[in-house]
Length: 438
Ligand SMILES: [Zn+2]
Image (cartoon, rainbow, N blue to C red; front, side, top):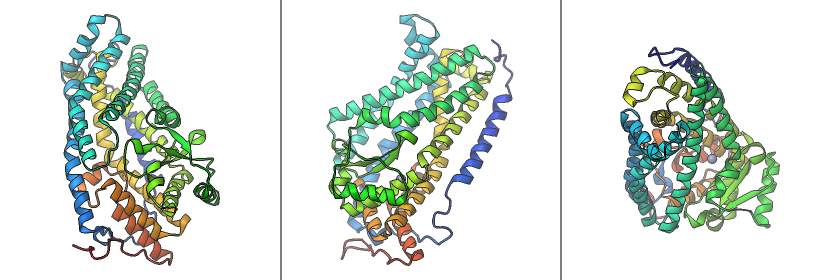
């Protein structure tokens, strides 16, 4: 086959290097490294705002949830690697597609379903274990039937998205044996942008129902705050999160015409109105800075770089021998593709987390600037952390690998620092009286 004569092609690696350089420049220039404009930020001090019993409850939950979550992640990464870098995966694809006959499209569809099912089955026990921990601690409010339905829906979306992407990749490799990765990189970037745009319309409704926040004082005050902020918001939507979880949350998704601010019904039910205002002010910060759109563009660059890496790796005859495939045009290559994509996602997670935490800090400062109320902000952070049994002082490795947000004590310390800079009264210690310190 052209392009698979065993010689490694340098072109994908050169384009990969250029894309990574562009990505690095974009990340360095657009990430808000210093949200408080040079002012010193106090250290996180969990003891000031969380009683020993509250910290112990959070520690107990975190110790219980880490094993199933991390083991599930490790198995979910290891199974595709073992299948993808040995002939086992190619054999599984061939065996799954054989009874039904057919060409390469069929092999991608049936073989892909078989491989994704194998990974899902291998991690199923860990998912169930994690759910039982959430139930034990009162964080999950859904039935086991509801859990299974959510799992099935998530798996269905994963299968549809993955098979579509792999089908496109193999088709391009068959039409453009030498340059498929160029077209693939462009397609992957476009797909990331399109998916992020339609996500609120296509994916979120699969899991939740959304309704406009009902008329009343809160709605009026939130829309007024958005107007004062100069952020056009047509509506604040409420998600029926309570049928799944007792945690409190809010988020912004989509961009342009699909942008929406969503608050959990649990937040409205349990947090006082002024705390809801500080949460929505944080989300307005994301909207004002176009964080979803900008994050999507960085994600598109990253996806294009990932396809270039695939272009380089899949032109490597050593890998063909390991994976038992002839090249990117071979439908059985899908297993190696899944393994490489999983590995790249894991390797880039620390960078994604670092950027995310800085962007979250900027949104926190936006909330503080907009409400001018650091005390309510700290009370809100305490409410959210207690409701989720958040990790108040995570191990360094956990934090670097997985944390998308600063910890609650870090966010509270930010609010105290903001109060110092802005000559506002410093929020008092929030640990219940008589129990603070340990
Ligand atoms: Zn946020």
